Length: 448
Ligand SMILES: Cc1cc2nc3c(=O)[nH]c(=O)nc-3n(C[C@H](O)[C@H](O)[C@H](O)COP(=O)(O)OP(=O)(O)OC[C@H]3O[C@@H](n4cnc5c(N)ncnc54)[C@H](O)[C@@H]3O)c2cc1C
Image (cartoon, rainbow, N blue to C red; front, side, top):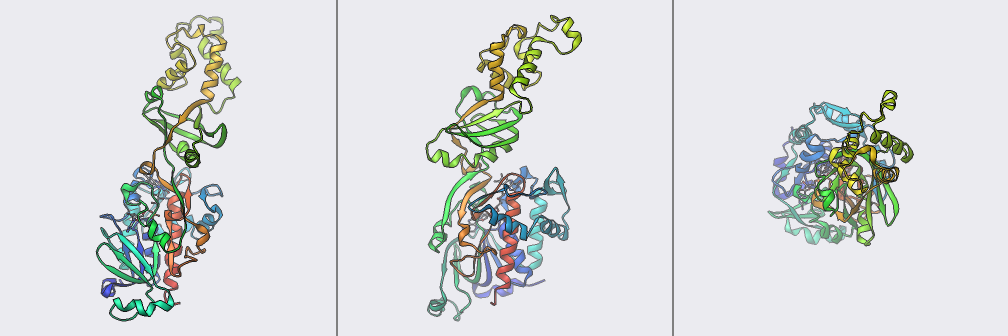
């Protein structure tokens, strides 16, 4: 085992990594495997805080499916190329070699025991084996870069002039110098886990552009008191984000009605496109199709039969036998009861009224509503409840190794860059891929 602690005298390092999230620790492992002496600074009291919360604690870290629509941001093609250069199979092999088994549920890939802790432990054990120094509760607060010609004069703060260590990294506890600096501080999503954009002004001060950061993969808020009563209801449906009357994005899956918001994977997926519309003061709504597999005509026919109680041929002969049902009892046979009551009221049908007495016109209104339940959206749930950040350091300013085109020796990885993935493990795959590539490149170029 490398004893890196002996090499950290005088606060001089080969590679400093800011942020002990998945991108930062993958970069640390990758650089250390190439023989670099690596120090990671983390502002929280322990590394990988957010990782433990991923996938509801199960950590969906990659996906069997990949196409050009899974990444969003300034240049999805750039993200895809990075994820191709260090791909899902590389990541699976990485974890398997560390002794962590994996599995997939559908296309989603998880650790075998479905516990995020295993992913964290695998990374931390490898950091320990490689002698990566992880300094927690030590936030980086400033970074300066001394270009070639100015280096001689500024290096006198150290014991001896050092032409290669052009980065001065100031933490809340001390000042360090390094040859390569990898920024892995994340975006602004879920600040409780440590990523809050606190280094943004330092990064722009170094000359980089940060594209506007907005919450993505985030619940969408409503202020409809009647909808609030549906809190806790889950339903499989199709969701369309509508901005100023125009359909912007659609998804299928299970949504969850909450007291003041709608959430669930399809809502989170379309939420990314709502942010700019809020800024522009445009009208945003979520249109929910509760029966996406039926056309409106088919659904009307089904509803008529359900309300009349004609379920089979024999009942046609005995058409009155089931006519004691209320409208709510009839609709609740194919829809969550609370949601059925809400829809009946919205369609102007008294839930306790006799199902068979509901006229075609009212039933058509109900059918239209079941296909187009409109939820007026008042905003998103903010960075606090977002899973990822849209926006970040401009990809135009990064090389294919995630190196800065502005500051030689600087790297930008993970969610800090202008890349956001859809649900399904794509954000962690991006964090790991970008970290692996940057860490290796930084170490390989240490003496070059
Ligand atoms: C609830 C939740 C569930 C999620 N589920 C999934 C999922 O199932 N699959 C998936 O692919 N993605 C998921 N994500 C997204 C995924 O977790 C992130 O995209 C990923 O963690 C980003 O990795 P990162 O290393 O770039 O940043 P982060 O994980 O945010 O790590 C950045 C680190 O930098 C530290 N830091 C910040 N500023 C400083 C500073 N100045 N000095 C030192 N350290 C600093 C932070 O404390 C933090 O530890 C989820 C996110 C959330 C919030």
